[in-house]
Image (cartoon, rainbow, N blue to C red):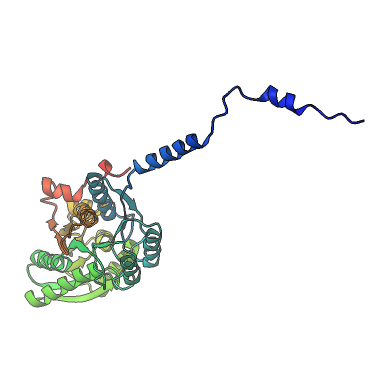
Length: 339
């Protein structure tokens, strides 16, 4: 006959010596505590900031300005952009990803005025406000546009080069990228002003460098070869400026061909000091990034930011490079804001 174990005795041995209270009130208290804890953690506003590219000093300065504004507003800045300024398909992917992650707002510098329209309008349809900065876009579905007045900056570039040439000579233009609204506006401002105000200056060549300094070098070399009597050059952005600087140095044409560039970076600063560059038209990218994020913060507070905000430019030369206000443009304090 098979014996059955005395389970009651075993149960009694391992029973905890606590009263038999109901656990339901305790569980209710725990759930209430968890809910209260979640309610005490407010939603942290997130703004996605998407530049044309991330490598150039210009965009790093924009990043620093965006971070500065984010700190003031207690907003998280999510910074992401393509490696190069011509990769607008990657820029579209980044903006799409930010929409999908439900950021509270997006601040973007469109690499191409038409290509980014669809994704910017998608953000607007899904209730995510967008600020455009640095360069324009072919849609009205944004809350604010923050940039240099690029056409007027081109006007400044033309007058600066004309002064360096004494109002006469043959010049060439190193353009950036077809479809880039900001640089196209600079190039148009330059060309219109030369034609309108300086009849003894002739634009004899224009070529795109595709935002690539190596390509800009090749373009500058071609222009100098095709036009040995060239007396001046205008370059509409940092990558477009670096190539001609190298070409003039390599050919021994420093001071003989007057070069006016745009934006800044270590190579441009050195070129100004060495006299390779007659001048550079310099934007304030820190202010652009700062102001763009500020417009979004205002929108998210229920305010209505200005629709169009211009950021100033300065003409920088070797002579005024050490002026404190110019130095702030050329050497922004990136380390204070960027890890």
